[in-house]
Image (cartoon, rainbow, N blue to C red):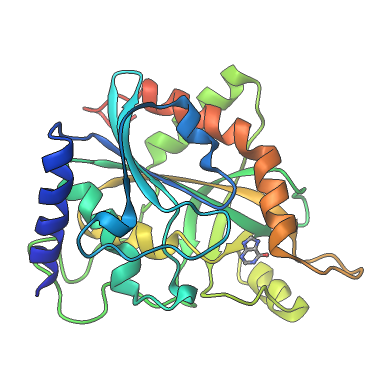
Length: 278
Ligand code: HPA
């Protein structure tokens, strides 16, 4: 079955449960599931039920699609995402993004846990992603282009909406949260980086590194969505001292920073201007 038919089947299944179109898609990263508490939930659908959806396997990812409202905005939220390192193809990883767009979402808000490689960062910092480096991941658009979704050679000069970056700064200052801004370097994982790799990533101009997001954002830009993304810095890669990073440490740090990220996402979405994209 071709990709468009799979997307249409998934959309048909979801619409049969919840007919209203959605406006905003949200992807919740490791330890950031608390956003759901700020939703007026209409319906939760386990990924396992949705035709052609992969099933999430990582600890800390619950694996369901939630449709509901944030203020007066209709949202579709992925609680749990698919990572390339779990063994899915790059196309499978981005399938839900394409479904969210087909459900009507013109905006995509993405969150993740990331390792900081900017020496000025601290664990628990929030970083607006202003750009990314995709060369160490598998591009989800490899292969025959799906013309019905987007162009063969998508422009990537501004994958992260400048208007939404400015809006995030304004919202964070109103809420009294400080934000970093930086470049996210995508890797496949599942290994955390070696000391030499963290240094290399820093030298290449990135501020943080993580195992998600970039493929999703590429697919979102391809199909014409407006994207905003934010990382919680959960560990620091370029310390000289002994520095063993564990998944638990990443989850713990994400849990602590999650309320700040959640309140920024919530306020941004509530006050989103759907017409002028800010
Ligand atoms: N590296 C890659 N991915 C990550 C990290 C890291 O240090 N922390 C959280 N996700």
